[in-house]
Length: 446
Image (cartoon, rainbow, N blue to C red; front, side, top):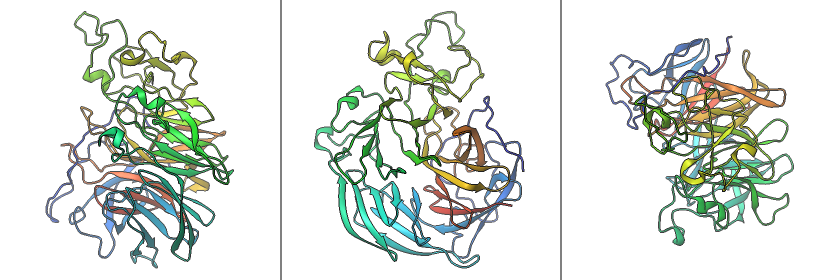
């Protein structure tokens, strides 16, 4: 099986948040991109899962020989976690609940039940043995999990900022939170920024645009990593390291005193679509105590020739440049002193769920690595397409982005699906949530 590397020259295509509604007899729409090494693969609905958008033939691109099935229909499916007794949990922030899917035999769709309801925008899910952590928008809860039931709810971190926080007046851009449990049983959770460029978040209590840590055994949450604009992707690597995938800022001003658009005049300080389309990159970074990912003062830069209008990008070990709007003279933060970002994705990729496929990992030549649900841009022209990405785990770090599944977006910009998270199941298959199609896919590998 050929490993399909993400080309440094590739830009994503197409944006649109509405699904296609053509009749079941229509031919599949042409995909926005064709990825070398992947094969067109029909998405196969299981019994009872063929309602729109699967009332017509849908195709994705996947490694040759892989099969993709609509395993379950779960409206607004977001983040995923496997229980100790092999049920797949699916969070639904808009419905305020967590759904449990119990696998059936063969091609029988899973049985569904509500594990717990009445929550406030539940998003992140994580297990530590038989203890389940759920990240609500305003707090982090723990529950005892046993025999498909949860009991003993405890709030382990409360008073977190969300849209209902009175001091924010109903304005909070990134209320959803994620949670992960470290090898030492410490609990990590994300607090996204309150806006696109809101430096006051760094001085908030608790600190926003950050990853916080609750020590093993409980206690007060403290800031673990700073400048993480919206670290919705949060996962623990095979060696116990904490990783985050970040939704970075929008409308970055061109920071260099030189001509970018070719008219002969300096473009410094201008918001130029051609520059914004690819800057800043979306980081995939390994966090350590006190690490700073720069936002909103420093931006990770994919340019191999800084400031030049060129498609020569790299997303591996990229340095930071000053944000002209917030840190023009470098007095807020020394961007050159920040460690390079280990890996990244193209600007406005919108990575959401992050997980690790551990030994033996995925089939073929993929093996162990990170899986990211790339939701796709809402504000890029041309827009970046949704996909499921893979980052190989080699020599205790992650390699470059590779596309596993794509084709959810058509040439005209319309979308019928938007992956959120991918996790490997106890059966070795890959399970992918899609909040636009309202589905969970099961992907089997040859």
